[in-house]
Image (cartoon, rainbow, N blue to C red):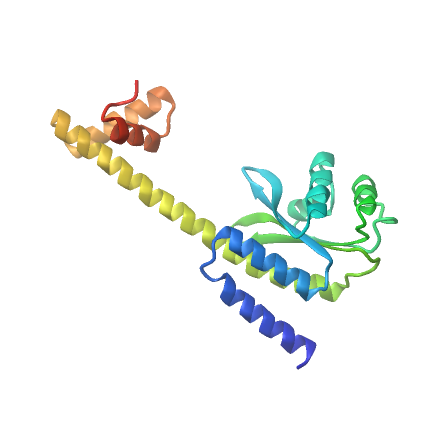
Length: 225
């Protein structure tokens, strides 16, 4: 089997494993596949949550520290890949001058080569995949292409899981609000629109989410004070 055919098979198998996976499983599978595909020593995935990048999956505690160094400095290949929609290769952290402080820090951790690839979908940025090697000049442009393909698979799976979570949350919220409306309708002889208006007024006046007002009503059988 040629290298191209081997990778094609691995990508197909990865896509099947990621289908329907939750976020944690998707991150673990994608990271494992990426490390194996480019023969990296270490790897990690950072995700953007609430506007900030954070470690989401790592293969080793060394990667946690590498992420921390980047977040502390506010600069590095992962953060730049996220911001600039690019991928970056560092052939030797002892000589690369683009992120001198971070490179000096990870060199002390034993990391000499780096490949950072952006995770993205048409809807926007999700984060970045970061692969590390202890030797210099480990990652090639071909590795960057492979990493980009893996990142695309992971991005689609992560976005799909996020949509599933948001949909379940929306359904749960509607159910909770409907229960609260029913209680108000029965207790105060209101119609559905009037009951919803009461919930909305409490939500606005107290700056509390509508779902939380409904949940408190259902649990305590009384509107929040």
